[in-house]
Image: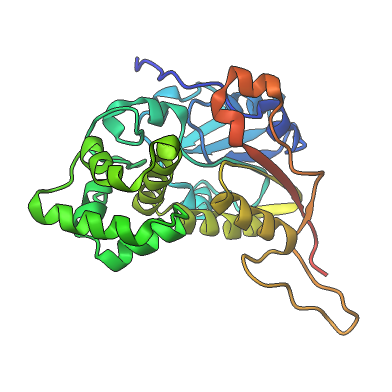
Length: 305
């Protein structure tokens, strides 16, 4: 039997699952299975007729699968949620949970290349079967594309200078390790904010490698399609790039602009917001440092007018 992989405590566990307003005989989806913490809490609230489908493309997460007849773990990117649920005959569900970003386990595994704490090959792939990794991004992307990534996904003021240093450095030798990248960044990064800036650099590359923003947009659109009226969407995000589209989509079903209004000034939107944004307590942050930047938003599917 495969040994389970150790993951940190799930963030905002009770609040996120409470937000789904579980129907014991309902069908639910956990699109970011990871260590299975949120999934186990959902199963604890389901009756014998309930069903839970979980998604995770990371081979490590598959070692945490749950032996339960009500549970199915689908080893795929959640950007394909709607397609794979249909393969199992599921067209509508009662609730969807997403805990976005990188798992603590992925950050803690040195060989995965997600963290600035360890020297390792620059990998950063959540799906180990895909070809594109951080080494390809750094050595093959044009200077213009590198600037775009660092500006859009890292919100870095040093985007231009960093892209120039990367394109110059790779003329001398291939950029392959965390140490290589940190050395390139060093002259641009003041020591007092080194950790923060390097985290932004790594975040930008990771988002590009895994196409995280495209996947998030696809997932939110699909959530509107497959949620039943009255079904709930419960999403935890960890930085503003994720939180902004989640907030906008839950508010008006769009990522930009405002919904059209009819002659009476009314707009037709797919969701209503449930409660206010929830952040972890000081106690939870003390026990689980990963929770410090978490934001939970909950919405309910409504009948469009």
